Amino acid sequence: MDSRENTFNYEALKIAAKFDPMAARFLSRLECDTYDKFIMMLYKDIETILALLEKTASLRQNDGEDRLSIEIINILIGAGYLASHDQYINGHSDIVVSFNSFTWIGEAKIHSSYDYLMEGFMQLCDRYSTGNEDDCEGGLIFYIKGNNALEVVERWKADLITRNVAGLKTFNCNNRKNLSFYSTHTHSKSGLPYKVRHFGVILGFNPTDKSARGAKMNN
Image 1 (cartoon, one colour):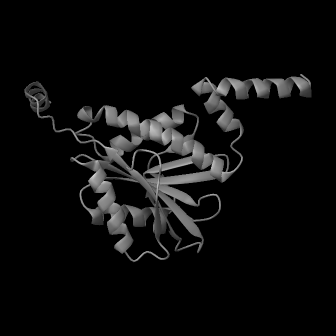
Image 2 (tube, helix red, strand yellow; image 1 turned 45 degrees about the vertical axis):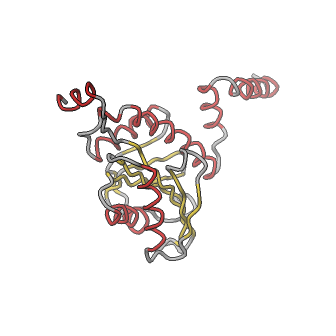
Image 3 (cartoon, one colour; image 1 turned 180 degrees about the horizontal axis):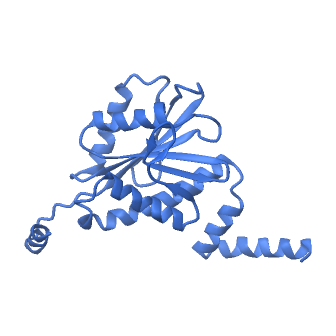
């Protein structure tokens, strides 16, 4: 196979990727040679997975943090990532995703209080992550089983700003319809900027119609 044929195949794949999600996924992995590209690819996949979880919220009311996080991990493994649960990296991390030399760590919590979310944020930033150039972003995933997930996300963002986090700044994320935002701060160990994406996940299920209330009680 000569170089001209290689070039033709690559160009054909680029064209196919415009119409075929599987071809687009394969192409993104071929081109994933920087940490930024890795993160962009990973977040697209996580957004898709969280949307799937939200569509089955009624079946997840008894699921704990581990069960929900393992669901995310299993789908990521199926998508070609090296992903694990409870892997030891300066402690037992909820979600660890690796691709080539790149690492992303996620901490997951079922929302109960903003202090509890802060505990997850501190675990992610001060314990698990190294903050080096191949581990300079992470995620806080919080499963919201009550109503009005948007209010929870906005209140968490406002609460985080009041905490004593060195150099903290927050900014909006255009994806997930305001149920996600970013923060950056000075990593306590590396001294470098560390970026966290905060994901609110809609898992509330409180139906008001008669048949749905009956089904919920039977479950």
